[in-house]
Length: 344
Image (cartoon, rainbow, N blue to C red):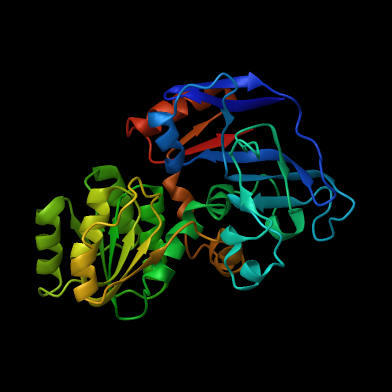
């Protein structure tokens, strides 16, 4: 079969690899019909050291179940399923608490251990706890939005939940990538009264406004903090969704949170230390977040997608075939595309 393999920074190829197959009785084999390139894929695209074996990329997918292991009970051959970016058994203590990304028997797709889903097929460990059966056909017009439930919509929602967004509150979203834009959707869905998007790309800002952003801040650093405080009567916002992961973005997030506010961080941190920890401490700002347990959120978000109440699939602004994926990486890295959808 064919799959996307990253050998080093900027070095992405479509390679012929061994066919995906069942390995354990809890596995499912899924033929991929839709996949995506994620903003987090751009970190290795920029920094990965060269490897002769490479890494098979991709952690967002929708597909049709082709085979299941002997112990799989909740999915059947022929089911159309969405695959969250992390696999989980659904039964361990952390899964029962809704934190599937910390599953005792879980892990992440697109790693050296578990090949990724930017491929014609993918092996899904812990299929019962990981896959979610979709009540639509494989060619449904909602496919782009349904695919976001595998990562970016669930991740934006996680940021909003951790930041304690609620009715009547003010919220700010740091970052205008796909996750940040989904964070705007999530903040509006959870009832935020004022939603400030911090970004500077006109096409993304326009989409953020359509999703529910009430204000735009294009400044950076101290100027951004000052501008957000001007928009909030000098107080700062109740909830900050940090969707980038850089030191500056986190410093901004902590700078715009009001005393007693909360920051939900879902951008993969590129630094070991947390900036501005003393101001956050003295302002009683809660800082939380991490890899979103998307599997826990699908059942909540799916009805709104099916009813057209939210349209997170609009973050996809480029569609490619598998053999065009390397150029999709380039386009996202050069900000020519917000998020790339892969159709098979």
